[in-house]
Image (cartoon, rainbow, N blue to C red; front, side):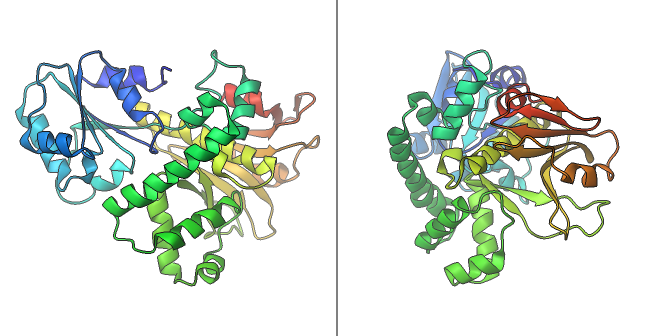
Length: 372
């Protein structure tokens, strides 16, 4: 399955180190190996490969060298910088990892000017356009999520078995490798609590009571789950909006199939995933600055998502499972913005509708033709 990032990475590969990051088992290795037939693949998790990496003994006759999980090596940035600066090209260099590689850019040795960062996301309706109908794709995302293995098998039983193994590997291998965390069981409980609260503002005090730890610890654990690509935050947008709430973050899962709740909640998570994937694609391929927010004021009027590009709000999105009437909250929030599009995205929609300012569109159509 060809991924949409492939031609962009192939174009940049002769000039820069490619840092390819994203959730574990999202397809990074398969994508990397699809870039050329002639590659050498080395995984830092393998004892044999780890020694070859440290001794710098890969096959330099190949067009490409792929270093998987290299960020687990101490001072990996200075190491790959030395390779890039001192060895002639080819081969091209791709570094992949299932934790956020961008967090390792801080401090110490800089890779500035030597790399391009790409983030690979689970499958979306837009990425699969032309290979599956939008309706089929959306229904499958609702059932098993967008990670390639469970998506392609299209079996709820297989998805559950995959999901258990997937989380075990992250918490018992990646987490231990990257963070000094002993209380893995409490982090598992935190994940389970978050699965049931998708789309709702997170109460740190409530989580503190549930887990019997400090708010500081809760925030630290949430950041770890972000870094490991289990969850991602959507924070409130507050610029120029009177009486807005400035603190409560919503969390969504990269794996929609993990979400526990009504179908409408899973649909909202699918839309959140699609929006984030599109924003990261724009950021990684064009260099623009992007962010994803939600809107809410003290009267609890709310719009699910606000898309911001280069510090300019450009689109607001409200997600509904079955709703024939436009949300009244659009009328309130639209007055704070100029030249902004607004969509009410509905799964069970009988016919498309529009007002002067808002478009009501089916979820499958919106997600298939998602544009910003």
